[in-house]
Length: 208
Image (cartoon, rainbow, N blue to C red; front, side, top):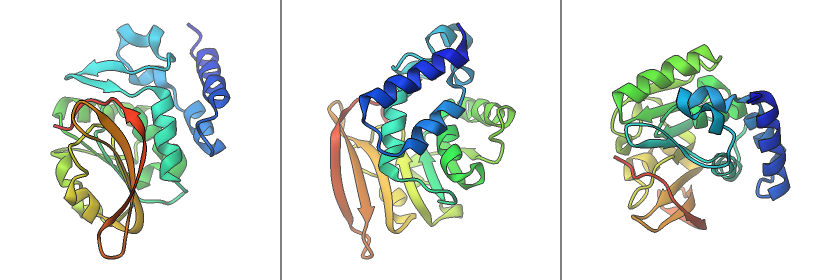
């Protein structure tokens, strides 16, 4: 497999689908070598538009879903972003391309995945991304408030602690539901309540 050519074909397919409004998102995804974030035995499948297993019962999301989520978050350089569910670090790297690595704070439940993601991100030039192992339901209050927050795993509802750590006017994006899930984007109002929008059915591993 020629990874550069395969990545270019993937980006062209995503562009043809027309589901991403911000061209910067596709530019970001073109910059991130997805094959470096998957296990060695999955490398040939790296640029298929589908999830792939990464260990600990977790997956790397399908590229089109990463693109759609980045587009919905309307990320801009310098935005402070909280990610719940680092996994292999791929989604964090795409986010880092859009806001700057030092503005991405990611929480991973599994110690082993957090350690591997931290090493991988550092090796690939995203060493300023902040990664810690812990319970994502509690967010990462030390660096709040955030302009944006998103979950890469499904929750029955958007965790209150994550919402509280987003500044008024900021977005939270998450797959919500058990079994049948919906991608929900919510803007936090000044009073702490959420203005919610639904963006279609999705299927993610569940938040642990």
